[in-house]
Amino acid sequence: MKVMIALLSVIVVGLMLVPSGASAGTMVSVVQDSTGDLGFGFDPQTSEMMPVWGPGTPWVKAGYFDIASAWLSQKGSTFSFGMELAAALPKEGSALPGGIQLAEWALWIDPSPFNVVTNPVAPLFLIALRYDGSTYSAFILDFGTMVMKSVPFSVGGAQVQLRFSAASVGNLAFEWWVPFVRIWQGPLGSAGFAFVDGIDWGSAPGQVYYDIPWPSQ
Image (cartoon, rainbow, N blue to C red; front, side, top):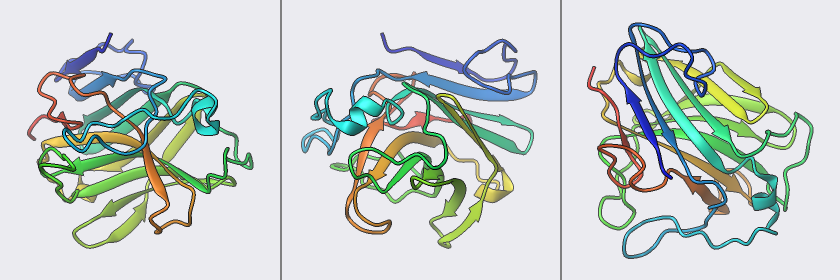
């Protein structure tokens, strides 16, 4: 069952999916995603991701490209974004499976809900963790200026978490966020990439396509 928890002020400290916990004055949205649903490409009629890979596909078997849940929270001027995956992430130095050269666990901030068919808007920001088979790194990319800056992150077991400041997104009162996992079988910057998992449609109250609503600031 697809479940969405949206809490907008006083958050229970024991909320297990947010590693740092949450407290009064914190806003957080947490959304669950089905596992075992990795896909490539989008339905040309609806834009929904199509699961087309079998269970024996190397990146399906790996498990850590498969989103189980994702969250975005804000306390004061600090945002936290994270994912719980279906399996533990690789340790640094461990090769990626199936000829994958780069993997990315990411959050997009969109100006309006993205749909590749009806509303293919350019995102405002990308906040992402990358792994190249050797080391992890994390960054925020401002699509308005194309400036990329490093952000702090943690990787532990099946969980990733990144932190970024409100100033790093221009203190923007944004409305939409969306988590995705992306892989490259070609070099970074090439067309040899695929979006392999995103949040199920209809998982969250107010969700439009893949985009989750975020409280106005």
